[in-house]
Image (cartoon, rainbow, N blue to C red):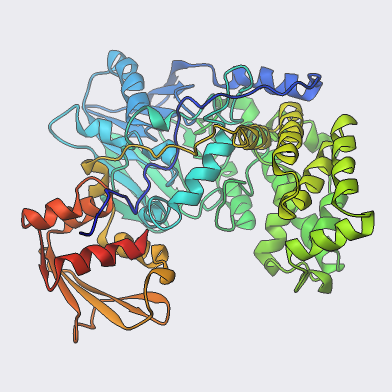
Length: 573
């Protein structure tokens, strides 16, 4: 009898927070550096509070320290608007308890500055507090990027984000995440709600007597917008300005970020002559501080961009350029450009890749030896695996930890003394992590060290519910199926399954040539035909509903063999 386990093809939400398994301490002296002390002091930038600002156009309430991203409420005549909803339903509720005391008028609209979960995952809360749901306004590309994050690249983004934001690090080792206190998505199910009003370049509207201008402003994301309230003289720049060097590249993984677009977006903001800037991370910028801050911020970005291009055009490779570019002293000393989030080094690599792609230009890099072959030859040069291991021990003993990591890479590839190598690697990761003043690097290294514990069982999967599944489109579901297909589980014969959904949507999946081809117009010669309600099918693939139970109760109907359909699903996990 075929045994089907409940499983999920979709891992939601994007980030997690949970208690980790035993985090075994490493017996190594790690002196606190002055740069790490600066990072500790940087936490003052997002101490938890809600502050009210009396602007010429009315009151603006600014909540900071609730998760990573700030949330803003603008008072109108008979209603209010929310700009960014915090990183979870839980945090949105905590914020709104205070917002409501300040003004209890209904929430008429929510504006997403961009697609990231720390700005959107609290939205569902506002659908529960009043009978009339607020409109959700965003750029026209916001849902596209959200579907991709919730869908086809969710597993790897979740894993890398957990490392970068340090959600399993012990409290004694965790400081902050650079642009906020901590990521709190895992405190509740992700509350993303699809936008129902979008725009391309600019949208002017009035809501509850509040005049609002929304401008597309590519930068940290391609769907980024900024909010300009002309009567308030108030600007909400989203993630295009915050008090740290920007993430021109993020180590959790991202599409190429348009650096020139980012510069141009800041120039648009500079031209507004705002009296108030309410960023989505870190504290507001007020009055006379605004112009010099925006100027040096955009100039710091342009400097890194232009010098990278200049040295690219001289023929230097990215590894060389990284060593050649340093921010000028006046830019480097600006408190808005300390490397508490992005770094110049990572930015250089991303800019190079954005213009020229992954190939450095060095012919050695075009088709290099495999990692294993390189490790074998390296070990042979130094006299074998034993001397390589001794060199690793010496590197750790001498606190030469980056070299220790590189040596451990080779020994692990060679499968030599894996337990001992991992223990030394863990010491190197812990040392480098604790000494790093960049939270992204610090958290990533310390989390990677935790993963080397013998009792580490992997990152738990976050809870998902029906409301969130409703926000994921059928198109996204089928894209997930395509990239989840394991061709080793099929004999490579042509096999077609046709799906007819109650909404009128029809799709097919054809297994052929070791791929799962998705189509909307190829319905001949189906091996199986499936009829289902769209939502029931999504719940099955999301692990909320059992495929066996769905077939038994008739919510999914199979023309052909039920067992064959269940076997078909097993090819996608």
